Image 1 (cartoon, rainbow, N blue to C red):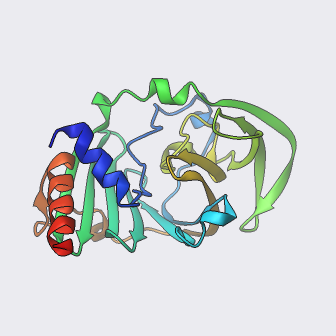
Image 2 (tube, one colour):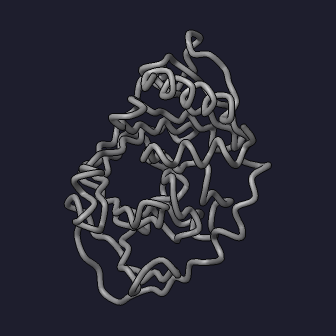
Length: 232
């Protein structure tokens, strides 16, 4: 089975990686000098915009922990179990940790070798006047267009916090706190629901030794094989 076939079979299972953290990274924007660093936890609610799909993709959450140098991003899906990304922001290197029913795996990535420019160019951003509030803080507004959006969608962001702590849209002039992401399964909405500032335990940012190191394609082969065996 070639690479394209493996991805086709994987997609056919109805499984979506909600951690699209290997996309949308860019160098820190020019606003950074006016912004303050952040250490702590961010919790986002994840939901499918199309209400007809919510029975297939129920609401989920994404947790982000940071010590201002490393990010830990947590998601959970019923098909793949817990997914964690450990990302060193300065080195632009990551590990995707997958704690699945078929075992524990880690996938290493080098973001400096990933070409995301073509994906980014599809978005256009237009600032809006006036502010609104989210989790008790003032947020700036921005109108974002994309070919997959039927109409422009309003995004919210914290201007005083760098966008580098987000897993998406790091070209924005601040931390995205309400935004939408086009995917193969439709538009996914993210909204910040909790924000705690503190110094997380450094153990959160370690890469466990009991996870097997594999490539993404090797993991797909293992996952698809386990699905095939269970259906026999």
